[in-house]
Length: 257
Image (cartoon, rainbow, N blue to C red; front, side, top):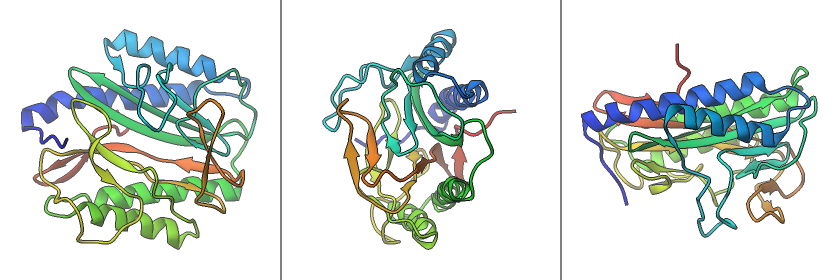
């Protein structure tokens, strides 16, 4: 299903985007060496309830996971890159943590992810990895112009990742959002320009490049959810929910003043 929102509906979707951005920044600021992944989930729960919103994850049971997920945020550490199921783990100084978070508020969904180092200054390799996924996200968003194709977004993302020396996995990528999470169209993180669905004003997209050092292969944890790099290499993930408007892409999950 692909939903095209009216201008009024995009306006109604903005509070969900602001909430996602606020929760991610709040959790990042509170995360220090010794913070437990289960604490992060508890804090996210409290912020969702305070806002009168609804988690998109807790009851989520897609074919690619062992559902329902049971938590409200994905916490992926070091070699984990996607769908990290929060568990009893105290973060250590130097851990590379990805937080991926989605909520429904007022009938509309927003989804975003950030990656950062816990505690000590970042290494050159980790900084390159985080910077590259962030740059790939920016390139993908810039390509999300009305009249362009999904393939233009994929090509922009893939060009940044491959130019930086990373292989690109095509099993998981971005997607449409709207009144539900994980809608069509699928947005691969590599592709050919001028191909695929034509971007129209009113389309909401979750654009999400991610990368792994030295591999494009994934392995899955016994929990049935957490996806890791097959070689144990570090990983990073960046994501925003973007509205396609008449004048170009608008980030709904950007940092708020």
